[in-house]
Length: 232
Image 1 (cartoon, rainbow, N blue to C red):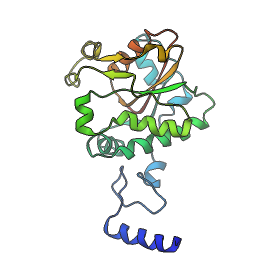
Image 2 (image 1 turned 90 degrees about the vertical axis):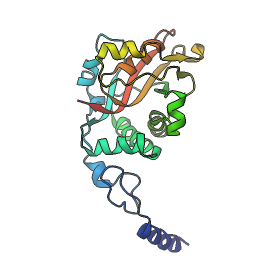
Image 3 (image 1 turned 120 degrees about the vertical axis):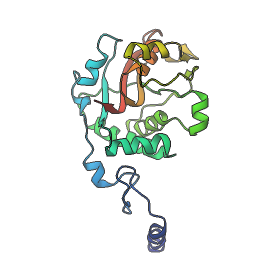
């Protein structure tokens, strides 16, 4: 039976090859979403081993944070950008799940990384969710949760406002644009929780700041920031 399934896989791969989300080359039978070569050459930040990493320094003084980590560096024209594009615009939630899993394997090896009680993905506005069909940050959270064994809460923190584009705004203007965009539905559920707040890419950090400040209004809440990519 295994041999027959193997032949069928080979036949399907011949006509409908699965392609690597990073480089676009055909995947081998034992590869999933991202090829082995691209995994091996991921530009990892190793921020989880350095509490004073550059991403953490970018957030210093803006809100209290337990740890600030990102898996890889984001650079324009890179394979990381290809994967982020697949995740956000090419209907490939599996890319986010796989990246979350890969990062979780690295975090599990760390002697420095502190596990949280709960994972909360940065929410999408309902209109964007309807258009995309999924929240890319929740896909990343699913991959992290599966390996780290930390539960996800994706229903409590919600986005009320579909804010205008942030790309040409200053950091403070971005935060001002977002300060009333989010809402917590059940604060009691989060009391005394150490929350890992998940996003896909950190640039200015304004979205993460707005969410964190809101969550930290709840008694005993601590925040750790985790993204897949960090834009230098």
